[in-house]
Image (cartoon, rainbow, N blue to C red):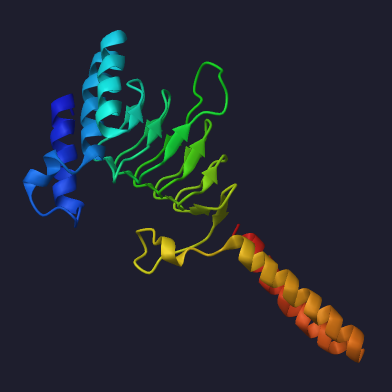
Length: 233
C-alpha cells in the first residue's frame, strides 16, 4: 500500500470506528492525532528516500500543530489511531503494527543513547492506555492491552494485559473479550495487601484460640489464592 492509500485508510478508519465523530467536517478540525499521522506519513515517505532535513522539518510542523512528536524514521502500520493525541511521543526506532489504538500522553521511548533498535515494537491490535510509558527495545504482543499510566519495561506476551508501575502481566479478560476497560482493571497492589492482611489475621486468631486445625484450613485456602494470584502475574 502506497503512502496516499495509507493516508486515505487512516481517515476512513476514524470514520468507521470513532463514535464521537458526527460529520466528515470534524475530521479536519477536531482530530489532531489523525493529522499527526498524516504529517508522519509524508515525512516518513521522504525519509525512506534518503532525505533527512525536510522530513524532520515536516515532523516539526506536525508537532507544533498537533503536540504529537513522531520521528519520521519510525515504522507505523495501517489504521493506527492516536485518540485525543496530546503529548504522544514515538521514537525513531519504534515499530507499530496495524490497527493499533494509542491514547493521549503515551510515550514509546528509549532507555539508552546507544545506536540501533532502542524503542518498542508494538504488534497488531494493541491498545495503549492514556499516560502509559513503553520504554526500551521490548515487544508488546499482538492483541495486548496496556493500562493507563502503566510503565512497561519488559516484553508483554500476546493477548495479555499489563498494568502498574512497573507494569505486571495479568491474565484478564474484559466483558466484551476485546476492548480494554480501565474501570475494570484489577488493583495488583491492593490484592496483595489484602492477602497479607488476611494471613496476619489468621495467625493472630490462631495465637488467641490455639486452634491449629482452623489455621491449617485458612492457611491452605489463602495459599491457593496466593498461588492463583502469582500465576496470573
